[in-house]
Length: 307
Image (tube, rainbow, N blue to C red; front, side, top):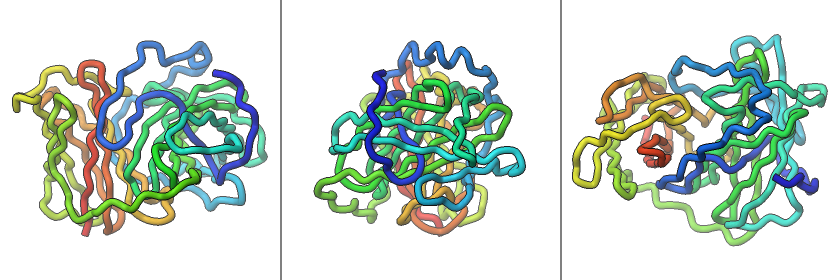
């Protein structure tokens, strides 16, 4: 990837690169050579234990960056991510960006652990939660990541970046970017579909409770069938897990507390993918469930109400 000319700082934290992405419900192909020689230099530690959904908390932000403390042991490291973008931004175009991960003194954080098979996971959503992407920036050493992102429509976007400084716990950073142009009308939230069809796969959401309540554990079960309504047989691991679930609360502005990332529980059955989590507050949430079917990353999105 070409070195990007420094443009303007765009609000706080980080961004994106080609990887597994999707806009609304859909699928993308899995690359056969996503790991670069830079990744091989990194410590090949992976987070092997599947963990329940959680909301990642951080420190209050300053003028240009969001600082992130290890949320289990805050004495070790504080990090921040700074984003550099081109001067001219436009919807539905590839935009090259640079992310610099720094410590609280502004010095580069240059060593990272690989977790869930990647060195950084980036979740990009429009603030109306209509558009979603799960991307993986390329690491260029000295704390610098280069990414390319497509923002489908004008409006405000929030970007959540998950990374792990060497020997530390995961850190979550977020930033906002504004894409100029006429902002589309918000989606009507009155209809909550429980089944989505993704080309040859039908995904049905079956929560363990009819009414989901804030603070209570809930199982979110996604039933999978082919276009002939038969159980599918070709589910493969995606980023080390049977499935990944990103949940974001509809709010303005979006914050760390609105973000949940859950991993599927271990299961030998291809009939469904199940997640255990809880929603911290009442409100409207959108969920994106991603899984790998025979080399294609598929994304099914659903809205839920939490009482």
